[in-house]
Amino acid sequence: MAGSTALLLYKGFGYLAVPLLHGLHARRAARGKEIPARKGERFGLPGITVSEGLLVWIHAASVGETNSVLPLIKSFCAQGYRVLLTTGTVTSAKVAAEVLPEGAIHQFVPYDAKPLVDRFLAAWQPSVAIMVESEIWPATLDALRRREIPTVIVNGRMSQGSYEGWQRMPRLAHRLFGDISLCLAQSDHDAKRFSGLNVPRVVMPGNLKFDTAPLEVDDTALADLKKQFDGRPRWLAASTHAGEEEDILEVHRSLKERFPDLLTCIVPRHPARGSEILELCREAGTNPILRSSGSVIDEVHDVYIADTLGEIGLFCRLCDITFLGGSLIELGGHNPVEPAQLGCAVLTGPNIANNKRLFEALLNSSAAVIVENVQELATEVSDLLNRPERVEKLAENARETVKSGRGALEKTEEYLNELLKDVGVQIDNRGMR
Image (cartoon, rainbow, N blue to C red; front, top):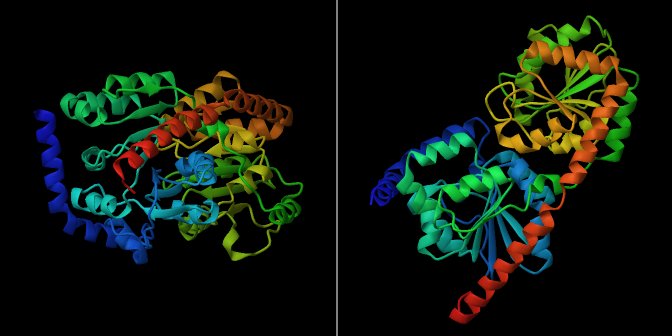
């Protein structure tokens, strides 16, 4: 009863919150975090004409989750299914526009308010819903249950902190997680937590991120920047966030004393922050350049800011030493498989909860280095710049670790194809879509 009451209160608040969500959307749009022309999607209105037929709805939070399920999307489309991918960030929408195969479309996910979710589901009528990693939204799960739409968690991730949080609401958790048809967990640890929250069927096929293809690169851009970077010691700070660039610049200043020709490359997680980072660099006394400016790097430039979309693969190929952001601040870090596949020595800060098992696999294989603070980061980058043989050893270990971790994609496809066949039969028997 307590679980039902809490859910009723949450759904009731959803009705009251709709006017506030319009204001929230306007504020986010003003900061470049929403696309005004696509506002309706956030409120459950389709941005395109909806066609009939069996539809697989996949929801991924942002770019990393989208990349991890892209092979699944391609597989579903190749089998003739229609696929709707929803995400919640502008960057992921831009990536989706570039990489989605024919038969798949992108929409922004509606806010988790009952009237908006109901509107979304009534319009799209998905036959199955697939939530990627840790996308657990009460109003959405309840609406899927009421419509008897099978719900699957793919590449499921549940941190200890989240697990303990749900345990403080046992009846609500029992209600919500009990409605999930299948959870395909990343690891045994995640599987145990989902099982402990009443998911009726949990299996552990492995982590899909090990099976992702190496990030693509524009060969012309690669050759051009190689010429500009030629002969200069360099390192990469990838997927950085506000509050981290200052630390990166502190490391840069420290390293410049020993490596006068040093080039530090910064790829912010959100490219729209390029101008902001440019000003930070100038205030720090460096000579930065924005990639979006189209200017050629010369010897006076010592910080290169890649304020462009989808080019981490390019810079991982240019820089053998890669630090992954979101880890010096408490954001949980980013996917280390991407640089590991491309022959980088991978460094990270201590906050790696979002990809803990991936990092553990790399750390246990001496394939990555964790640093606790800015001083340790400067020390490690300096050592790696002086010891290319250590860089190569870390990179070799990383490639082998990624290779040994593969196999989750095939197993995940088997489970999902079995479910989709069952859903198709059920729909045919009921004369639905």
